[in-house]
Image (tube, rainbow, N blue to C red; front, top):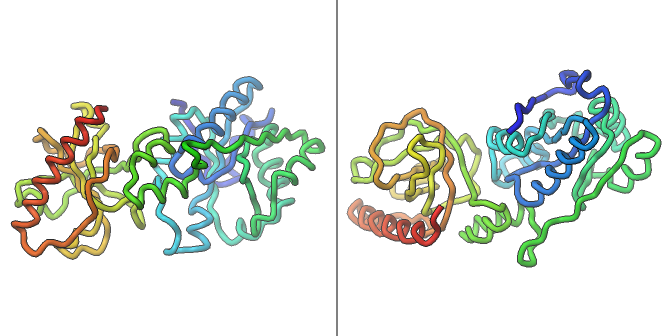
Length: 316
């Protein structure tokens, strides 16, 4: 993992480091799936070959969040998770300006001139086969290829990754997760779907029912997964710990905001404040409202049994 530098404003870019040029890719990078990994690998490899810094450019908030507001699709990753994943791919500079009205209205020509040329001093640009940019997505790969020679800018298009006949995309992964198809989501991501966060104090309802839970602060507008899952928790000193997790609004208790609660097997330690990664291994069932607490506890026992069986079949 590199000591990646985060830059939020174009005026804060490290111009001395970029003086000889850079190798750049641009995208939402939501989930860092197999397609993203292929792009990032090409960027890092090319940067090393040419002795230039590698740059990943994205936006915060995402363009879809800017335009759709509360109707925007759930993120696969929150910002911190994206930052950590990009650093793990050995990206040197993460340029993530704010997507606002000025970015919405920028023309393709201005985007190329102001951001790619004057800002990032791009010498090699790596993009996917569906890449569009600038206002109303008017900018295309053809535009970049046409002006590239006059700007000393090489453009490389990387084809999409296809798994089992499915083009890998964040949209396809969201659909798989929404349908409880975790095996398909895992195949497209190249790893289990993961949510990370810090353990916070909850209402301690699980403890009173005999199932103490670690409550994970999601810091998300909405969740890409909902329901009951067999999970494997990473990031604790004890190593990976199996468990069963609930993501949702606790319909039996009428909560409004989705929360993530994890009951860890054979684990009894205070972990408040610790930062963990929850890998979703198998979807067990959807959320449901129970008529009584006894019915809920009986189902929780069954969920634990099913989770243990699922995790035994898929050892970490």
